[in-house]
Length: 227
Image (cartoon, rainbow, N blue to C red; front, side):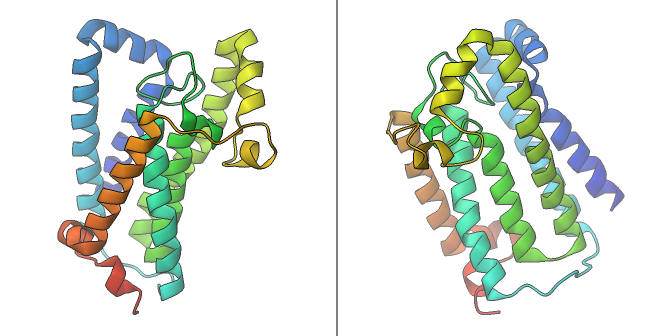
């Protein structure tokens, strides 16, 4: 499990960079935004592969027996998480993690002002439920805990950084998903990043459920429903 812990620590450390404006600002100034994004994405992908390889190479120790209900929970939470992460990354969002901080919040912020972090949290929780072993709890539980703590940290930093502009963001968005919509403080709207994220999520989910997940990770989530 040592390699799993090291890989996870490296992955989480890398994903702390976008939440630290000073470090990200210096990197983008030195490299330029396109090079920074390319380098960050490549490094992130490589570390994620390392995390998953280390986890699946570790000894399997069962905590609970997965059943169709837990698999079904994952089939609901993971696509929703993927959508939130994708939409959050490509939408302008001055209050949270985004490739494009911008000044005007994108449509995804009507659902939550921290879509990327909530997306990772939901995806992680789904995989914890569906697997039920020590290595999955360590990897996905660690990612979920990191995301939950990240929501609190980013919220505090954004409030301090935005000053007088924070009140307008807070009124029209919410920390917890859909609260602003249900309370009437926000109206659901669509924009290009949100529609692009929805299309990408549908395509990716379809591919994963029709053999992609089995090819990548050796587990078919559809067959797992018949446990």
